[in-house]
Image (cartoon, one colour):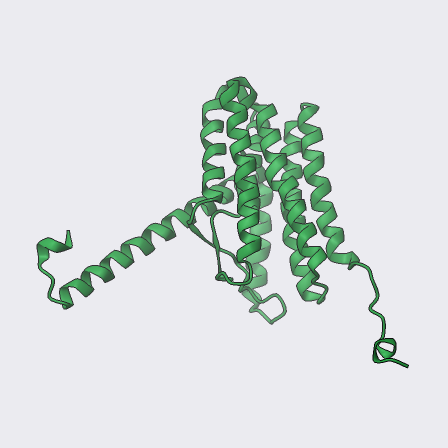
Length: 260
C-alpha cells in the first residue's frame, strides 16, 4: 500500500456559515439595483447598508469559527464588487446622475472602476500591508456615502435632479478616495473574543439607540465622518513628518533658509 493511498482524502466543499452572510450581502446589492430601476430609491439605499452589515459579519464569523478559506476570500471580493462597486454606481446614476448626461455616467463609471482597483490592490497587499489601517477609503464606507445620500434625500423628499451637482462631486470624491493613499483605521485590532468592561456594552446600546433616532441622518453622518477622518489623519501625519524632517535638519546644522 503506497503512502499516497494511506493519506486520508481531503473533503471537498465550502464552509456554509460565512459564505451565507456573503451571499446575503450579494443579494442585498443586487436588490438595491432592482429597487433603483423600479424607482424605490429609499429601499435601494437601505439595501446597500444591509449589504454593508452582512459584509462586516462574514469575515468576523469566519475568523471566530475558524472557517476561513481561499474560496471565501475570492467570493467575498466578488460580492463586494457588486454590492459596493456596481450597485451604488447604478443606484446613484438612476437616481440623480442620469440628468447630467455624459458627465453623469462617467462619474458613475469612475466610481465603479475605482472600487474594482481598490479591491484588487487590497487583495494583493492583504498579506503585507498594515492590518491596523487601510490604504484608501474601503469600498463599504464609500458605498455608504452614496447610499446615505440617496436614503436621506428620499426620506426628506429631495429629488436627485435637484442636487445633481452635489451628487456628482460626492460620487467622484468617493471614487478618488478609494484609490488614494489616504490611510483609514481598519478596526481589525478590536478583540471580539476577549472580555470587555461593562461600560462597553452600555456604549454599544447607546450607539444603537442613537442610530434608531433617525437612521438616514446618523448613518450618512457616520460615513462622512469616517471619510474625513482619513484625510485629517493623513494631513496630521504629513505635518508631523515635516516637523521631524525640519528638526533633523536643524540638528544637522543646516542653514535656516534651506529649510523652506
